[in-house]
Amino acid sequence: MIYPVPAVLVSCGETESEFNLITIAWTGTICTNPPMCYISVRPERHSYPTIKRAGEFVINLTTIEMAKKVDWCGVRSGRDFNKFREMNLTAGPSKLLSAPIVMESPVNIECKVVEIKELGSHHMFIAEVVNIQVNEKLINADTGKLNILDSGLIAYVHGNYCVMGKRIGTFGHSVARSNGTKKNRKYQ
Image (cartoon, rainbow, N blue to C red; front, side, top):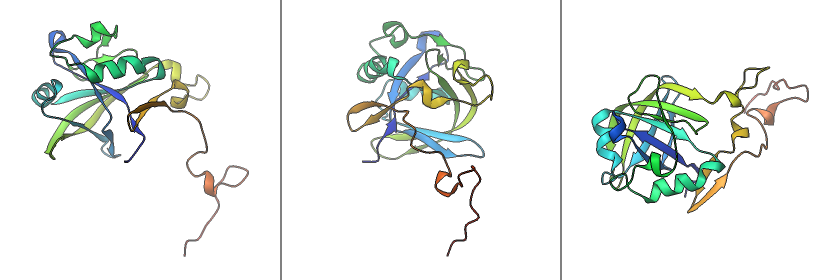
């Protein structure tokens, strides 16, 4: 019941003939330094042995334009379909991995597995983030800042896909002064 969660496409495979996509909602950040994240995958999934053997995967963030493809990749198996071809998605090169990125994705997070925790129905692949690729359209040309909220990211909420992006505040806005500086606050 911890929702929303990201709806991502995880790409894996060391060669073009084994490239595959799996839709994952159980993923997230677990550490800043070193940058680490996780995905949780059922062992019976087609991608599981590929990720376990290769020790790498790419988390590809997804957008509203990709929602139908994301869902399709989540209900079809790579045993039966070439998901890149079927969904007209482009497998592009990672910078540091053999696993491909999804070129249509606004952000691609390249990950190397450091540990696998067998937790029951799902096994958690704990991974170090080794590289991130970002679509240059999301970078503000004047400030150089990432405008990820403008990309139309989707999330999964208890059986539903939802679009994200409505800003309601920024980090630290609850203690910011009207001129943008933070208040000097004492905690009791």
